[in-house]
Image 1: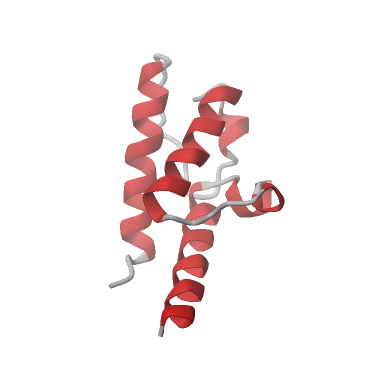
Image 2 (image 1 turned 120 degrees about the vertical axis):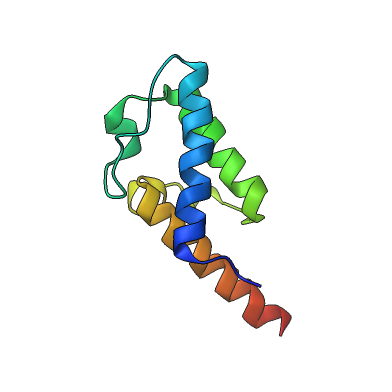
Length: 94
């Protein structure tokens, strides 16, 4: 069963909060549409780690061309990206 957008957003917030906390930051104020790099809750290495965590959790197979602010820059855009990949993969499997 595919996760809902709301479930994905909740999971993304938890992952980002864990990474931010490791750096002594609080990510709870980040809105769904805030650009994560602009919020400065994680450094560049943390941002890469976050993308890797998302890729591994949802088995997305993220490619270099996927790594854009439009697709992976906000909590909302990441959730949409995950949903699109899940739908694509379920169609291929079905």
